[in-house]
Length: 193
Image (cartoon, rainbow, N blue to C red; front, side, top):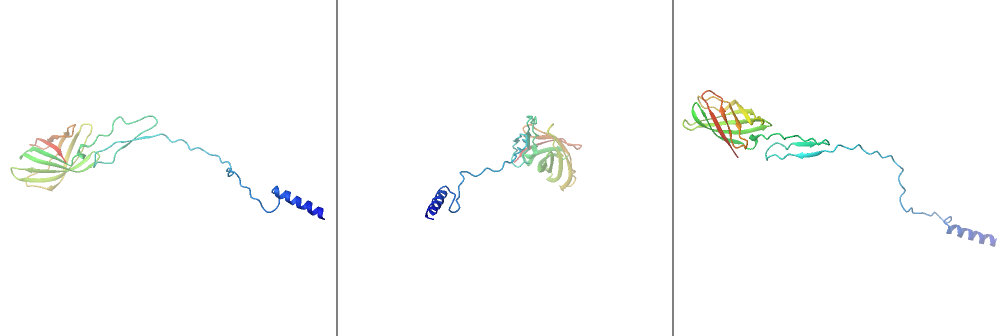
């Protein structure tokens, strides 16, 4: 029995040394196991686009965004700026039946090419003053606009509302044309801030 015990003890010791006996043994893996292979599908490439932002003067509509695509397309020219947006009031005079009359064209609303304003006049010799609403559409190709009246704000006695049509100088420093009413003539207006 002594020999069997010795052999048993020797066998248990050898198995323990080899990691086969005694309690549980934990083995640390040198690196985590890789995940199961998954098929990866690459997304389709999106078209390349370049965005160009055109700066606008302060107080104007949001800048226009122009896109250049893979073909290299870019518009040949950007939309013309509406010169009535740069100044809120144009001051000068016009000739009509009553004689030379002071005029302030007060821009109140600009939406694209459509302009709404107040035609505010004062005839110094008689002391007559008045104002009415007018509206017109600016044509960037010709730099011309025709304003037609819509309603009185202040109407002096013996005065009627008149239309006006004219052209803006290329540098935006002058709006000149004619009052389209029998007996009336030219007007000349300069922008103010």
